[in-house]
Length: 378
Image (cartoon, rainbow, N blue to C red; front, side, top):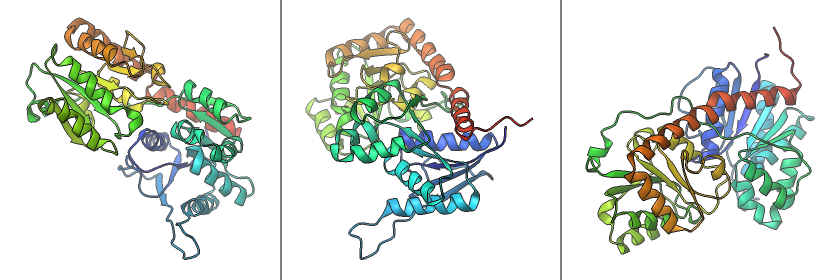
């Protein structure tokens, strides 16, 4: 196949969309394609030098005529500049707004080249999509893209219900990088966790939608039946409320706040269970990261979570806000060694075979060639 020149537009910060977009670009470069990243700063996971990976920073210039720096115009201009100079084949925009809209504007500046592929990750629909003032611009970003994907069937359904775009949306799940797996670790002893104590883990950005308060309450209800510690990784607007709740419940000695962490494999490697009790979740990449390390997951039966967790197989699904059921499932998982082993093996199989990078990358690569109408060159 002819090697492509691919532009990837994404957010640089920690989060599922940024991680997937960056890993996608890196893996495409390893397949021989030339990859150009566009963002406001170097993407979080773009930390390995590669001869065919390039980064282009879009700076928000400050002009007195603008009340706020026009980042979107700078981004569109940068995409157009590099696309023209490097003759990019595809711009893959992660998020409908602002990235797809910026890519489409750049394409129009260049007389309808390159092709624009947009991937919907969730917040651009599940949060912004509920703002009626943004419907038209989101619909524009979706309908004017040459091809649109979404990370779950649930997100596709919600997009059609909220935005009602006249566009086919193709489901391409998130993926887990092949080298992400359980590693030997002394972290448990370093954190002062006894050998016989179980480790429950939660990782998020501590926003209200993640319902970290329900994680705390669920864990607290298990302590009279299971000796365990809860590790909380992340930070965000709900942090103070969570600290106060832990103190109010009198479980300060059993909850360990680790803050934001860049390297997660060692943390996943000491976990016995992972909790994700969000009220909205388009996919939940963190579930795949846990499963890749053999950690069974408990999640709410909402959004894209049931597309990752198979109830009773690689974890448990529970109704939203049902702390009693969640705590019962957690106690069962932590106290039944045979069940835990069974679910751990199922979790590994899910991560490696259903959501492995080779499978999902092939899906994206095929879409790239299809949208360009390329033919195989032997």
